Amino acid sequence: MSNLFGRSLTIIAALILSACLDLGGKTVKEGDTEGDVVDPSKVICNPIDDYTPTFLERGLFGKLYYLEDDQPRYSSVDEFITNAHAIDADLYMNRLFVPTRPWDRGFHTMDGQLVTNPAGEALYEYFGIEVETELRLAPGQAPGHYQFAILADDGAIMRDAAGIEIVNNDGVHPTKMACASQSVYLEAATTVPVTIRYHQGPRFHIAMMILMRPFPADPAAVNDPQCGQLGNSHFFDSTTTPPTAKANYYGLLERGWVPLEGANYKLPKNRNPCVLQEQPLEISNVSLSGVTRNSVTVTWTTNVPASSKVWYKNTATGATSETAEDTALVTSHSVTVTGLTSNTLYSFRALSTTAGLQSGQSDERAVRTQR
Image (cartoon, rainbow, N blue to C red; front, side):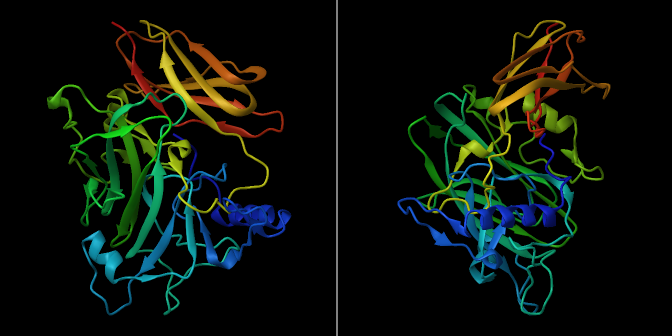
């Protein structure tokens, strides 16, 4: 799992603002070589996800909504968005990957201002988000039919361009998994435009994550055992920072579910003004292969040359370890982890560090060793 929660949002906002000023306060739009001036007080960057955006063309774009004090506290996300009021700022997100955690920090604009409603209150609860993006395959993902799912606290719905629901996880509830019953076909040369609506009811927890897996060939397997399951401690331990994955989440990874990466989201219109001028390290295309009774090979790619190391965890005992670091700076990485226990579920993270001392880690992947 990426380290999404350890950095200060204010620091990130300052860095982003500095990068934009280095660019002359401009962001480039498709087909526009000059670009438009960015008003940092009108842009909200990655409000519920501290992962720094890395590519201009990736991400989700939309609006943030609030309710007046005298309005009903809607339990349906569509009712919420229809009746709520939009904040006068554009919302950009790198991806939707927010494991269950407490939420009390509110939203900040690019220049560090706290977003409030007309009464001067920060948006800690009863807010809504509507974003649009184009889903696509990330590097290493094969063309085919995919099943999507949403982990959310509270309600969320994802629809295609025709308004047809792909996943419905509506309502007011703790972290809950909802799964699509129909597949979405993805191929390398095409994208699937979607709109995602999300609303947060009463405080104090928040969760929002989109997952996908190849659509099961066996109809009986379409309804994953975790579809419909819920609880703020069911998938993640929200009392730790960052939130710690639990056995039910590792089970999803073992059955082929993966959270969507930044590369899976293409901005439908404007390019992302939240991207830093200097491209940060990004780890992608993580895969597990060569599984034996006591070893697994982890491969991944980085967008800039970097070192190679693997963190791994015995999910039954909780014991963790790391391989020795290969300091050769490369963009294609492969590390074989040995000394594992047979017939045991392990999770892995790819770790890389650049010559400029940028360090990064991938989301967790999990596989069971052979008997």
